Every structure is written in C-alpha cells, then in structure tokens.
Amino acid sequence: MKKFFFSCALVLAGLFLQAQNRQIGIGYNLFLPGGEMKKGFKSEHGLDMEMLFSLKKAPFIWLGADLQVGTYGSSSRRQTFTFRDGSSTETDVNLNSQIGTIGARARFEKPRTDNSKRLVPYGQIMGGLLSMYSTLYVEDPHDEDGCRPLEKRTTVKDYTWYAGGGAGLMYDFSKSKARNRSFIDLSFSCIGGGKQEYANMGKVYETNVTNPSEGKPLNIRFVNVSTNEEHEHRVADIYEHPVKLFQVQLRFVYRW
Image (cartoon, rainbow, N blue to C red; front, side):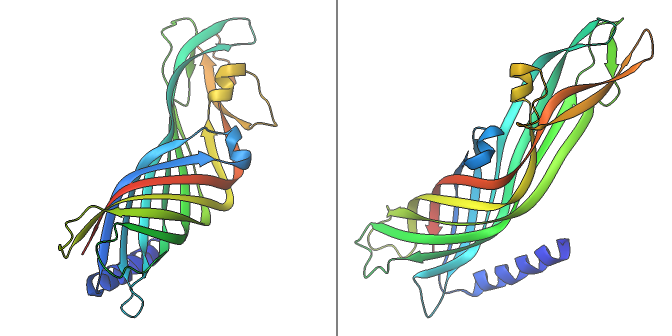
C-alpha cells in the first residue's frame, strides 16, 4: 500500500511540474455528518490542501490531489465507575479523534475569455481513502483504596473508500494584468463511502448505560487495589456506519 501511494505521488508530482498551468490551495475544511453518522459525531473542523494542474488541450479541466486533516472530537470528561461490591472510583477519560482523507480530484471550470471576469464557477468530482483515528487515555484515579486502570491507553482506527461530487465558486482578486492569479475558493460537496468504524464517548457521558442501537461499548479493564479483582467498564462507544458527509471548503488558491 505504501509503495502504491508513493508511486502515485511521484507520477502526480511529475505531471504537476510539467503542466502548462498549476495551482495550489490551502484553507479550512468542514465535515457535517449525514445519515447514520449523525449518531456518532456532530462535525469536523480541519485543514484542507490541494494541488491541481490543467490539461494542455482542455485548460478548463483541472486534475490533481487533495488532503484533509481535522478533529471531530476532543474532550476530557470525568466518569464514575461503580464496582460489584458497591464501591466507586472517579477518574478523567480523555478522547482525541481525527479524520483524514487523501484522494484525487477533477475540476471542470467554465472557460474564461479574459481576466476581467472575477467569478469562476466550477463542478468537481473526487474519490480516495478516508480514515478515522481515535486515541483514548484513562488517567489514574486519586483514590488509594479504589481501582486502577490496567489499560491506560487504547486506539480505534479504520479506513475506507469515499467518492463524491459538488460545485464551487472562485473569486479572482488579482490585478487585472497579472499573469499569476490569486483566488478565494468556496465549495460544497457531498461524499459517500464504505462502512467506517470510529469512537465517541458523548453517549456514555449522557446516559452511562450501554445502548446497542447507538454503538457497541469500548471497555477498559480495571483492577481493585484491595481485592485484586478485575472488572471491565465502558468508557466510550464504537460506531460503524457507511460514510455520508456534507463538506464545505474555504481556501486561498494561487495559480500560475
């Protein structure tokens, strides 16, 4: 897999350097969940980067790659764990969750006859790999006679394919006679994909009960300091849903 991505990156870099026109973009990315994914998280905020080049015989067609990285859940919550003998322990549970995508993009612009026209509408399609990665850390309680977590840190990670399409509008704020152009780019897209496993602990914090219809429990083993008895306690939920996301991107684009 790594060799495949490395080979694709080399081919793309070669085409990008040899292309007649090139552009790079960087900016803000927002993912809003749709469908069943609404049960697992509310939104993702992150960074978006793209690298595109136009075809010589069809300069209104732009091809290239993009990368997005962002966070959909970062929280620290104090949870109370009750044991079979009636005793309880309070400790902080920290969860940090990210989304990342890497993929290809094709953009189809309305041809420009001159640089005096500031607005450039376009449509686009994209596809690639999407990954969701969570790290959960359970702190040691300050209760000397209570319980201690045997697994302080655990991770949940998974990846799947995605594909989608959308439309956007670029505003050219360059000087009219400048050869190189600068744009503000706003786009809206819908993407779907395969099933994705990811973690969240919002429902645990709200209800502190296992609800199989929402997600399966992510358990951590604890040991009772006094009795050496081991227990498992739910600290988060693991969801598995088909990818369905609404994407908003706002970028600065430089074209030369």
